[in-house]
Amino acid sequence: MEAPAWNKAELTVGEMARRSGVAVSALHFYERQGLIESRRTSGNQRRYKRAMLRRVALIRVAQRVGIPLSEIASAMDNLPNGRTPTREDWEQLSMRWRDELDERIKRLQQLRDDFTDCIGCGCLSLTCCALANTHDQLGEHGPGPRVLLEDAEPSCADT
Image 1 (cartoon, rainbow, N blue to C red):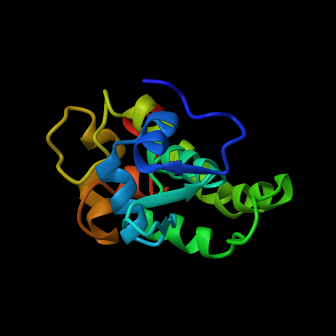
Image 2 (tube, helix red, strand yellow):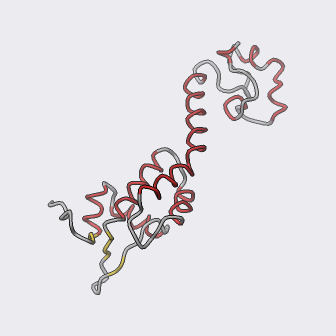
Image 3 (cartoon, rainbow, N blue to C red):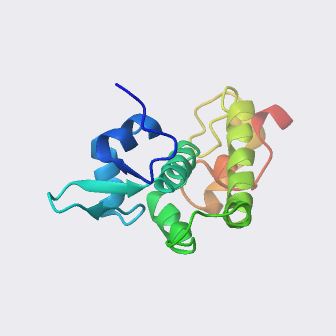
């Protein structure tokens, strides 16, 4: 298939799918969720402004790092609909997610570093749990893997 002309103002749903790398069904879903928009031709065919490619790219990247669609939609509501978003628009959006992404990175690093030796205490099933969670004191903080959910106690690797 031929790529859409670089100077084409609007893309068909097929062109949008090919150019963005997103399935047509995903584009329809994003549209139903209010993340992107199109206009309909007299023949009821969708036409997307070329600027929607940037929105789809942002959606894909945000989803890839685990940002829920509801948060993506909320962020998209703050972006301009009538023009192509500027660098400043994208920087503002990035700053909005920075703290959450930093926290997610911290948790992923903790999971990577501690998961082999300790599942976060809450089970007392691994040999080192008696060292990191003596007398199940983390049970006082609530159910589940407390070490991996909050900074309650050191992991087995720290003991």
